[in-house]
Length: 64
Image 1 (cartoon, one colour):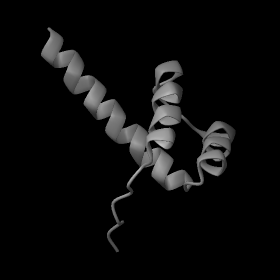
Image 2 (cartoon, rainbow, N blue to C red):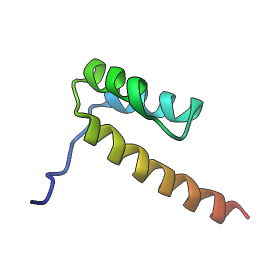
Image 3 (cartoon, rainbow, N blue to C red):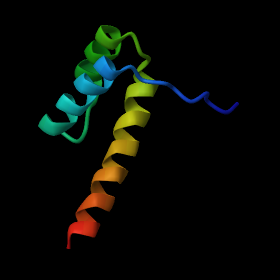
Image 4 (tube, rainbow, N blue to C red):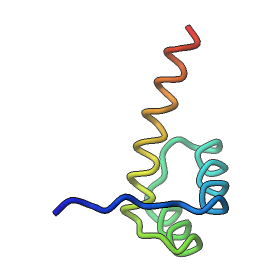
């Protein structure tokens, strides 16, 4: 079954972006902690990071 699109709150996005700045990959305990802190599932965190890495790569390509 297809996942429903998550509408992230500005606060959640702020924390996700801060985590992404530190490290483009999030796994294990760190992902569990962030998920429970932001009231999101680990899958939602995982998918956000995948999408954010894609966006980052695209931005890098545009800058060249």
